Length: 302
Image (cartoon, rainbow, N blue to C red; front, side, top):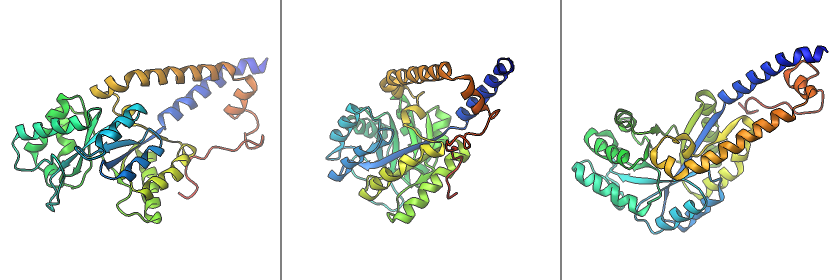
């Protein structure tokens, strides 16, 4: 009798806990860019499909990588070359600070033809180009026309990328962590842990890495640990679900996944027994006393 009286309160508490868990979800968005030149780049396909590939235009493997990614349901982006302060060679179709708006639009459209299934753009180099307003406005107006999103790689603190994108109404984000500008295992781990701290603090983090063999091996080893820490590896297609081209290419797949997840939640609620409800609410013995491991709130080493 007492149990029946308490059940509404227990269910209310459980719903509240579930709501808090949903709000506390931390998304990790990983983009590997510079793909297209090296045969070894294809090793990145061994990583979860939530990891996005950003492909350099008109490179030897651009079309092959883009097509295979599309077949596997993996999102790809255009890694658009832009002028650096150093004057380093950008590769094909690079954008320079002395270009007129029409030339910038032309180059971006031509670049997209080599990666036609790209749903977003981020800059390759660009410490000079992203810091000047007129060129970035021309670029981002075309990005918007094509229904893409923009990720500012932030190769300079003077970048105007996300500022202009927001003003023009372009879905956008900025890179927060560079994962692998050094390839030593200790450095990769340091950046990986930095990534996790930001995700837990802010609810999301945008990370850029590269398809180096060392990076691919490191991610294969360490990504499985994220879920245990309440972190979710998230595709750009979920993070930028409102971008028109993302919605067109991935909307149906995302709706199907959401339907399945909702069905799982409903099934879980139906199958929960009164005893399980009491255990979960803390009104009976703790799960540790029953031999069930308590979930970790944070990484053991943090």
